[in-house]
Image 1 (tube, helix red, strand yellow):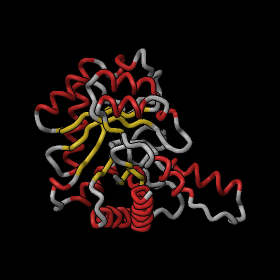
Image 2: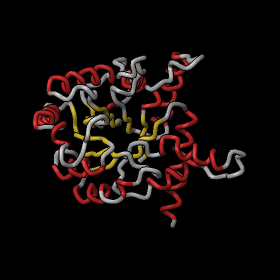
Image 3: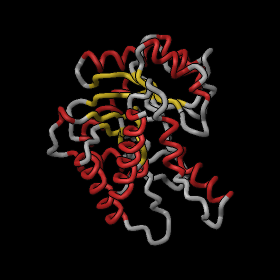
Image 4: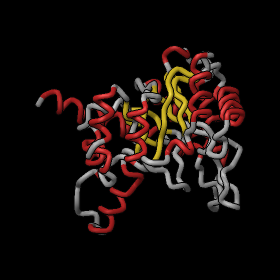
Length: 274
């Protein structure tokens, strides 16, 4: 159920004063090892999870994929589920193939379990026009890569639930990744129910709210008198949907891994006992 989201590994805040890349990489590699030791086998990455360049464009250093490849090297491949995405600006057949080949090289594997169309943010990605961006050539390329054994499942991520519902209805995708958490609940209105009916797995984006819950509690309780764990509240919410196949939580340290594993074990234990 609990997955390892690698965005924090790649989005490293390298421009902050005192940032130590080697120390960050050691923390990241230790965190992945700790996750595997504690039974986590789903790892979610993407080319865009990388050091940003000064122009705010997308970097090509692919830090997340590179470090995940290092961390997983030598591990039994058949016990791991590795998910990545295509690069934002590679939405043509040659670009998609090139993006995947680079991912395979960095991840040190000859296939990925899940390859997704990465969410289209800067365009009007709606139910009535999503096929303008995910057109026949894009879909055919993903299907061809699946037939070639380079990917096992095809997915799509994004921020527009109506577009993702249309994608589910199309029958082309086995996994959908909406922004879905305690604060962003639109997916619970239709998407999660549609996905369940169509046999499509849901892997929520930012399942623990991307820090919003912690920020809210700190704002309403600056003295820290409340004892509520904001991440427990967020995790309990997302665990309530049986169409959610995995919860890819962004983690960077061993302490974060241990905290999230403990949360899921406690909440799942209580739910089974109820």
